Length: 299
Image (cartoon, rainbow, N blue to C red; front, side, top):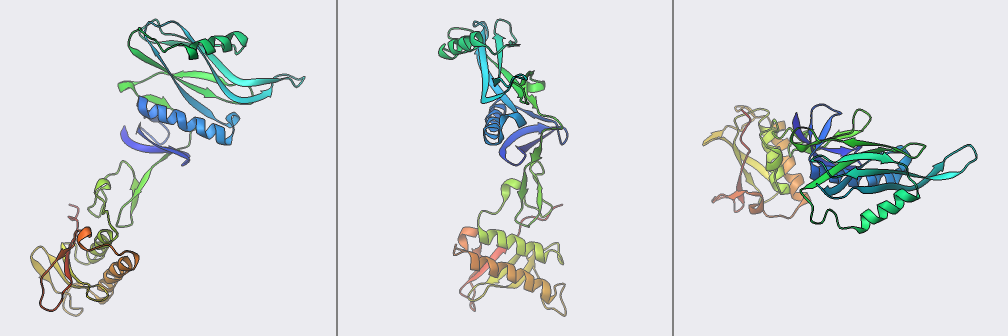
């Protein structure tokens, strides 16, 4: 079981969940309420007859029975004569025991009257502990079929199955690599929650990744920005690495690619170097020489 984040068909969400495989998702109560709102939004946008919707009904242990009508607002053809009926389901909930029980009932005038009384009555005033019933309604060409979702270990509600298009949320690292939400560490050394917050900071990381293709131990570089930015020195710790094309480990193409990354960032933003965490280095020849430090290399 992994803790991750998903959307429903990349339309609603994201929702935090536990996932055991691509299709099995379990949500805590807060996330279940969010999923409920999302499924109802999708049903209202794309039609109830093509959806399953989740509904969370609140009550209190020991309170009187309640009746609830879940009405799509649509109608369907009820018989061969073409009579129309409401696409709706109804249920009666008993809150007397420790675990509430829900029973489907017919959607009729009596059920709607009882549901209105439930709606107008304060929820379990003066009763015991708060309880919830989570219901999944499968809407089809008829009125709809209802099922109760029971919580599993830790109070999580398993919602959906193979027919539900859950999509794991991804995140983009500054290095350009995309990975699933629960994969919090990137191979470049950055983490999901430790991403650069400015354009120049992201460019510095990308430039460092470019340099590390030839020298994995590179830790920082000096960048002169008095004109178009260019890298004038690269370090591994306190040791300067030879950047000469004919004697050092770097070639002109790699250094040029790193310079191009930095120049593209300067064309995109006017933010200060200090805001990106670059450190001004006093220098007799340059008034704008900065040290950029790369994220620790992955072990």
